[in-house]
Image (cartoon, helix red, strand yellow):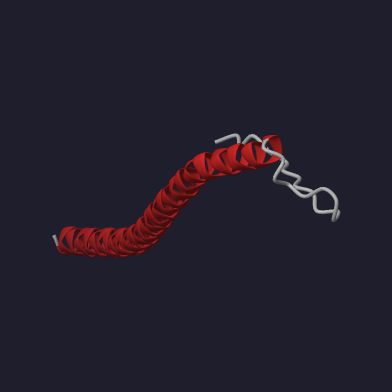
Length: 126
């Protein structure tokens, strides 16, 4: 009978040691899970930081594009103003040519003193 009690006590000790080993393994797995979760958290924070950087870069690119558009619009306005001014000079130049031709045809251009009228007309591409 005492042998049976000793055997049962030894079996209880073995079961307790097995339970302790299993609990320790569970603790180790939980610690590993915590480590993996912390790594996942770090990766998520890194991803968020990278996304924020990408957003910032995209906003900078948008600002630069808007600035480029504004500069192009200014360039267009200046070019239109130059075209308008060039178009306004055409009638003045035509009138100058006409006056010179009229003066020349009436003989009032005094060629004897070496004064000569020379007009070069360049056709504007505008």
